[in-house]
Image (cartoon, rainbow, N blue to C red; front, side, top):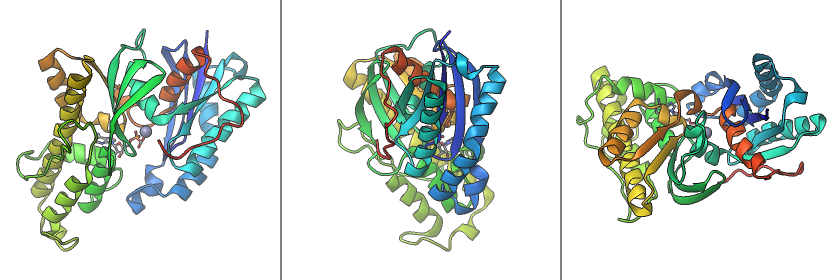
Length: 338
Ligand code: KG4
Ligand code: ZN
C-alpha cells in the first residue's frame, strides 16, 4: 500500500492529510486560524506564519494517530511549495522536507492551485480526463485544461481580486465577519438575488479571464452612495443586507458558471471539475450543476470537506506526481506566485 502524507500551510489553515493508494483518505486534519485573523478582517501573514510553526507538528502527529499509520509505513511526503504567503509556505515545506529526510522517504512539491483543481477527483477510481477545471478560492480564480493529472494548461485567471477575496471584502464592507464566504452564503438564502442591480464583468468576448474588483466596488457604492466609502451602513436593514448578499452572490455565480461554459465550448472538453474554498457555496454548486445538466456536461464538484484548504488534496496530487516519478530535491524552495 502507498501512503502519502500531504502538508498544507500556504495561507491560514495548518493541515495534514494521509492518502492510501491514491484513493482512500485515511486522515484529514485541519487547524483553522479564522479566530486569529477575524478582527483584522483578513489574513495577517506574520500571525499566520507563527501559528503554523506552533501547530504543524501537532497536525502531522494527529493525522498519523487518527490513521494508525507509523512513519515507516509512509511512501512519500508531499507539501505545498507554491503559490501562497511566503512565510507560511516555508513552514510546511521545511517541515515536510525535514520529515522526508529523517524518515528516508521521497519528497514531493505540490502546487496549491493545481491541488484544488484536481481535488474533485479525490475518492474516484481515476481522474476523469480530459477535463476543464475551475478553481475558485480566496487567493485564486482560474480555469485550466487537464489532459493528464499532472499537467495543467492555464486557460484564464483573475486580473484582480479572486472570487473568495471578493466575498471576504463584501463581508468586510457589510461588517459581517471573517471569512466572508460562509456568512454571505447563509445570509443570501434569505435575500432576493434580483433586488440590487450589480455588474457582471465578462471582459473581451473570447477571454477566459475574470475580474471581480468592479463588483466589489459596486457593492461599496451601493452601500454608502456613489463615490463614497463610509456613512451608509447604519441605514441598512437586515433584509437589505440579505438582498445585497444574494445579489452579489448571483453576480459571482453568473460569471463563474458563464466562463466555465465558455471554456467547455472553446476546448470541446465536456468534463468539468470545480474546486477551491468558494465551491463550498450552495448557489455556485447548484448553478454549476444546472448549467452542466442542461448541456449534458459531466460535472465533478469537490466534496465540501475538500473545498477549503486541506492536506488530503496535497497528498492526492502528491501521489500522482510521485507515481510519475516527479520527486523534488530537498533544496526545493517555496514560490509565492502562481
Ligand atoms: O481554498 P481556500 O480555503 O483558500 C485559498 O486557497 O485561498 O478558500 C478560502 C475562501 C475564502 O475567501 C472564503 O470566504 C471562501 O473560500 N469560502 C466561501 C464559502 N466557504 C469558504 N465562499 C463562498 N461560499 C462559501 N460557502
Ligand atoms: Zn486554497
